[in-house]
Amino acid sequence: MKLLTAIVPCYNEEQAIPFFYDEMERVIKTFQEKYRDVEFEFLFIDDGSSDGTMEALRSLREKDKRVRYVSFSRNFGKEAAMYAGLEKSRGDYVVIMDADLQDPPSLLPDMYAAICDEGYDSAATRRVTRKGEPPIRSFFARMFYRLINRISRTEIVDGARDYRIMTRQMVNAILSIKEYNRFTKGIYGWVGFRTKWLEYENVERVAGETKWSFWKLFLYALDGIVAYSTTPLSIATFSGLVLSMLSVAAILFIIVRKLVWGDPTNGWPSLVCIMLFIGGLQLFSIGIVGQYLAKTYLETKNRPIYISREEINETDYTDSVSE
Image 1 (cartoon, rainbow, N blue to C red):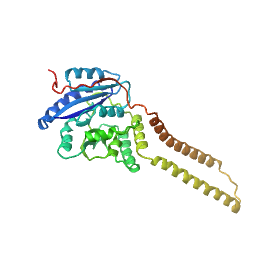
Image 2 (tube, rainbow, N blue to C red):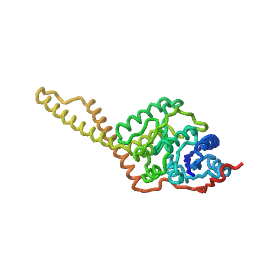
Image 3 (cartoon, helix red, strand yellow):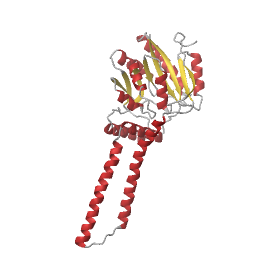
């Protein structure tokens, strides 16, 4: 028998968990009609939830001994939750999916078929529409993917989700990357392996509210750029070089004008504007350098990616769902 581990990061998903479990049970029955040699286990990662998420997980555990969970001591973020899930997973195949059903479980048979029947190392998903999202958020998301693929050698597919099934070999490759500041979408591309992409239209949350504000998404995008491109440092260097050359040219122009035409040097308002512009550019460049230094500083601390407070690691595959 082969084991498929479903990793489900959860942060305040008390309302969504019952819907997710019921839908997964329906899909698993259909799945095992075709692939009878595959067992499932659920691995929920509670990312320091403040609602009744843990109570819901404990209730699931009492009903279904295939359910395991890890509860963090505080909120460490989804990246840490996904890493913990990969680290604690025991399956021959591993799938990461959200509890809010925005990652349709109905795609699981096709995703598994890509690995089992077609020889791929992973099957990933991407949204082809962003229906239901605020237009400004969708616009900046598209711009981010365009930007990161222009300035980075690591390909990140537009609309890519964390919803992905992987072989154990690929999981081990991802776990070998121990960096503290994680951007998993970039890690997927960096480790390589053959990936089949499945497309689907955006699905609304089944319950609860999104935990990703515009500001959090902006910071996450910034982490991705800093993690997988040094182009911002090159831009800062190039900008400084160009401004230096322009300043030398301006000085020569002023000297020549004074010697030839005898014009007085005036125009203090424009001088103030230029000073403010250059000062702002300097602060911007220092900020870019600061981002890279900050990430380096955090890496050198060698802090754990997460700290668990409670874990259930035993799984009974013979006792699936109690009546």
